[in-house]
Length: 137
Ligand code: TYD
Image 1 (cartoon, rainbow, N blue to C red):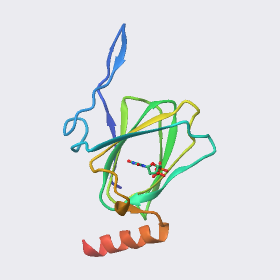
Image 2 (image 1 turned 45 degrees about the horizontal axis):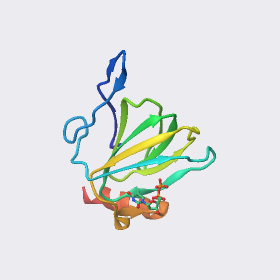
Image 3 (image 1 turned 90 degrees about the horizontal axis):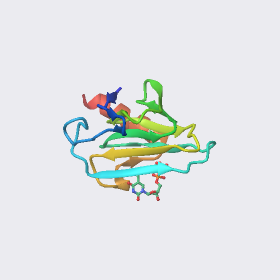
Image 4 (image 1 turned 135 degrees about the vertical axis):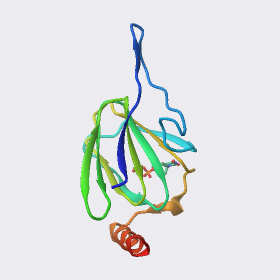
């Protein structure tokens, strides 16, 4: 699966902690878009889509949330709760985000502007895109 955890360097001293994110350095792409998700009721799940062509790094700045990631063959779950860890997602991956803590703030960096045409909202359509992608290889 095109998923990787990235450990960011933490600059910690008696005044607190700082993490710097830099495109094409500790972030593997040029950053076009930044958004953040917060105030998610604990029982709500977000996502339920895949992207045709998007790279993202998600960082849980505060609190905790979990990602269900599915490449059409394998499903895996990651729990993010460390602001010095990034979850890098690339390629055809179905994602659902759940189990948000009340205080969760989830930052997402992406390599493209927001574009609804890049989204796959149907799981069946996602599986078809994976099959088409595999047969093209
Ligand atoms: P949505 O895609 O439903 O979020 P999630 O995938 O986390 O469930 O997005 C919620 C709203 O925000 C929707 O109206 C689209 C808008 N939006 C933007 O305007 N820009 C963005 O970069 C994103 C990700 C969403």
